[in-house]
Each structure stands twice: as C-alpha cells, then as structure tokens.
Length: 379
Ligand SMILES: NC(=O)c1ccc[n+]([C@@H]2O[C@H](COP(=O)([O-])OP(=O)(O)OC[C@H]3O[C@@H](n4cnc5c(N)ncnc54)[C@H](O)[C@@H]3O)[C@@H](O)[C@H]2O)c1
Ligand SMILES: O=P(O)(O)OC[C@@H](O)[C@@H](O)[C@H](O)[C@H](O)CO
Image 1 (cartoon, helix red, strand yellow):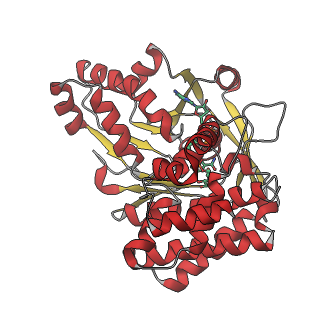
Image 2: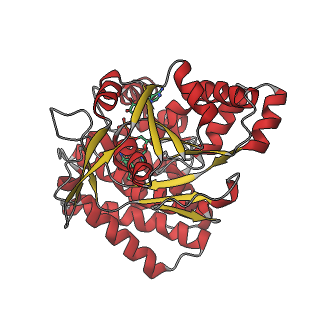
C-alpha cells in the first residue's frame, strides 16, 4: 500500500506519518518547507521521542518527500492508495487544486483502484470541507468519476505534539504517549484498511465533538488565560489554580452539552476531562501558550472550540460562565508572529469589543451572552 501525506509538521511526522510508516505503508510526505523536504530525502528516517511516564525513542524509516507544489505530487495522487493531510484548516483550500489535478490524471490513466483521502485537522468534518475545495476545481464528468472512485473520509485526531526543542535536527519530534485517530468507516471506498492505531467508527460526529469541544476547548482557554497571567507554557498555566478552575469548569460546561447531545455517560465524561487535565500537565512536554492559542480568529469562529460549545449551552439552557471567561480571554490574545492576532487587535481597536465579537463569532452583538463576554473582556 502507498500513501501520500500532506504536511510533514508536528502531527504529520509525530503521529499520522509515523503510524502509516509503522504499518509498513510506503509513505511520501508532501510539504512546502524545503529544509524538511531535503532532510527527509537525505535520511529517509527520523526520530520520534515519545514522552510520558514511560519514555521511548522510535525511529521512523523508509519515508520520502516531495514538494506539494509541482508535478511530482500530482503524479503521486494518481497512483497512491491513501492520501492524508495535517497542514492546518486554512491550508486545505491551497492543496485542493493539486489533489484535483492528480485525480483527473488518475482517471485519464485508467486507474480505477480505490483511493481514500483523510484530512487530519482540528475541525469538524475537515475532509468534507477539503472535498468541497477539490470539487470546485473539477469539471462535471470528473466529479462523477471522483464520486464513485474516491473516498473522502472524515476523522478526529488527538495527540499533543508541540514543536521539538531539538535545535540541530529539523525532523526530530517529541510527542505524548496518548494518541487517538478515529475515522468515519461509512465514507471509505473499497475495502476498509486495517492500520494499527486507526480506529473505525460509524458515529464520528460524537468523537469529533467530544475531542474538539473538550480537549481543544480546555487547551485554548488554558493558553489564553495562561498568556494573560504571564505563563509561558500550558503546564505552567494549568498548574495555576485560578486558571485550572476556569478550564475545568469550561470543559464541564461544554461536556454538559455533549452529554445531552450524544448521550455520553456523565461519569466516563468526567474521567475523560480528568485525563485531559493530566495531559496538559505533562512535565516532559514544553508546549507554549502561543502555539496552542494560535490563530484566534479561527478559534473564535462560530463552529470552533469556544463559540460552538457556548451555543450548545444556549440551546439546552445550560450555564456557561467559564466558557464566557475563556472567550473573553481569547479576545485578549496577542502574538507578534500571528497575523490573526494582529487582525483581532486591529478589529478591537477599530470597532470595540462588542462589534468585534459579533464579527468574528457570529454572536448577536445585543444578546445577553454578548453582554456577558464584553463585561468579562472589560474586567
Ligand atoms: N500539533 C498537535 O498537537 C496537533 C494535534 C492534533 C491535530 N493537529 C492538527 O494538525 C494540523 C497540523 O498541525 P501541526 O501542529 O502539525 O502544525 P505544523 O505547523 O507543525 O505542521 C504543518 C505542516 O504543514 C506544512 N504546510 C504548510 N502549507 C503547506 C502546503 N501548501 N502543502 C503542504 N504542506 C504545507 C508546513 O510546512 C508544516 O510542515 C492542524 O490542523 C492541527 O490543528 C495538531
Ligand atoms: O492545532 P490547533 O491550533 O487547532 O489547536 C492547538 C492545540 O490545542 C492542538 O494542536 C492540540 O495540541 C491537539 O489538538 C491535541 O490533539
């Protein structure tokens, strides 16, 4: 089996790529970072440091790399059996034209073998969104062929992978022991693949929302409150009792929505939250609040980890004071490196918090909940 993975970054090298290579799949990474591409093609291997109570160093071997811009990647799409991505939600639209070209070439070469495409991004049904971008670049007849030959499979992906601290190696990556990759088995074409570490489900939405609206909700709020309190890392922030109380409270508020919506067992969900708090505390990972808080406009958008749970609490008439504090803290996020943080600051300066909040989140500027967020922001 041959696979192409877009994005040789932290989660690409540290989780999805490793898992595919470990399964004996012939793997090529596609990326735009020339340093990483050159290093992969020179060594065809890299180290993954798995850190937690037990530690181990794994070596991933036999991997190649191509630029995601150009003909090589298009040819690969025409021939591989699996395409995965971990590039970031905003990049899916950029890689879609190459995927579309590759699919057209695949059709013209008469390659009718099944191909499945799985986006492994922190978003709800990311592959379905990628499919939309790919279809925008396809003509009518090609769309019909793609519908019957290509599987666009949504997934939920969970493993905390901060940038490596290794200064002399662009490929080394440090990951936590925990990992979870769950895919929607109803969306595959051809035989279901048996890849160790890839779990199949017919109830994906429950898993996607459980992960994004628990771990990522708590992670983001830890980052935003952590930055406001002057902490550099997620561990330092979550060990701050005042921050921990809000983060735990926000995950519980979001959890109450999930329990109503999906019928999760309340005790098991409480244990899930407890485990996540422990993962944030991992003493062997150095995860900066700036990484976890990155792209605040994305994180404050209507379908993402802060606003969607809040909307859920409104739908079911549930309390949400901690989510409100987290959203207000997100609006204070600042970063020199992050263009979305700059844009948010500009919006706040130009329009004030009420209109800026309404713009980025879609919340009604005059609603009670917007009043609460603005009051928390000003406080
Ligand atoms: N790091 C984590 O803990 C983690 C965990 C679960 C999910 N995710 C998700 O995985 C995705 C990637 O996150 P990450 O932390 O690995 O980020 P990252 O920045 O480490 O990696 C992204 C990679 O994509 C590459 N890239 C950018 N534009 C590209 C293009 N046009 N074509 C091909 N490659 C391109 C970058 O060069 C980089 O190597 C995000 O959606 C993130 O939410 C991350
Ligand atoms: O990748 P983002 O920017 O959507 O979110 C930042 C972190 O919360 C995220 O990368 C987590 O580390 C990851 O989702 C853990 O599975």
